[in-house]
Length: 359
Image 1: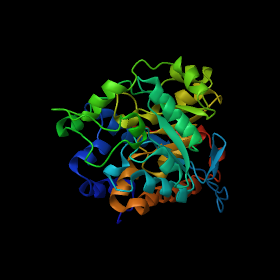
Image 2: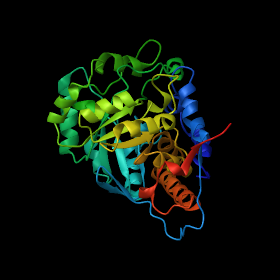
Image 3: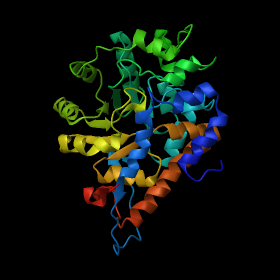
């Protein structure tokens, strides 16, 4: 595991995965404009360091939804961890537990909710809503009964974005890799199409494109877990979300995998934070690769960030140890960036710490 940053890690992970698996994890929709901009946008924000501030001790510990974490980096919901390593979500969940943070399990995990929770991490459950309300109900009830501590509803996927790498590769799950949370309702098998992405065909047939704000009340009736909405990119939707009583918002463009040509998440974070006005906690994902990225997001009002692709790359390179190294690398980088910026506590940052870069 010879990598010194997460940019190098992607390059090391590629030869450890099949081309189809690597393209599925690393690719985006359309021309991949948003995929690239999620990374480039961090360079459009600069830090304004303060000096002579006594940073001999710094604090990274915080809470999200009242849940304590060692530092404000959470494992994002990502599908099919077994594409990178046979232990899949079990290994990445153990890494999250060892790092002292939250693991978000995907609806389409390759291990069951109950198996993932048993690895010891504080676990959130990410929910895709199905046309069959009974499937959605069962998933929510299992997540609640199984020990998950929050429900993350993905709102930006009524249909799957056109991911041309997957179309060219004819993406299909390899033999032995299944969506294990869906076994009990016989939806674990992805159809094999003659051409194109089998994932897109699966989603078009089963996920609910009619999902709307009015469905939140029904979902809330199924669980006492706090609910976050993932996929919000505008002040308008942020306002609607808080009016519906959500506990949290994840500013996300699905890693550039849905609608191409939308802004990078860091560029709309302040807009969403302002609209929410403290009525819900705001998180962010999208292109986070450095501890300094985390610091910028926190300064602009995020409570924490979520990291997805690097966890999969870490699994590919080193299994559980590789995923843990990703998380520890971000911890160490954030710790140093915080101190060098003249700040001693992640809970007392504000927008004065950042400025839009002049180009």
